[in-house]
Length: 96
Image (cartoon, rainbow, N blue to C red; front, top):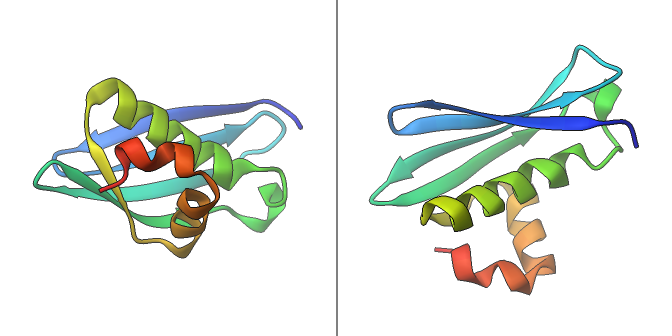
């Protein structure tokens, strides 16, 4: 897999993680809103040209790492994030 860089963008109680793929101008996104110290992972969006490369999982992994580092909980709403949490019981410590 080519390099993927994840960046975080926050605007008050909303934000996104962006996945920048080295060989593409397309950006994958995981969007969230925060209520009561819980970040609701609402949408994971990966354009078809960068799909099938594990980009969505990298976005969720970035959010989990951020939650552990910055002491917040994640409520999976997006079906992809719900499935990722089911497959990773080791993430239970950050799940709301």
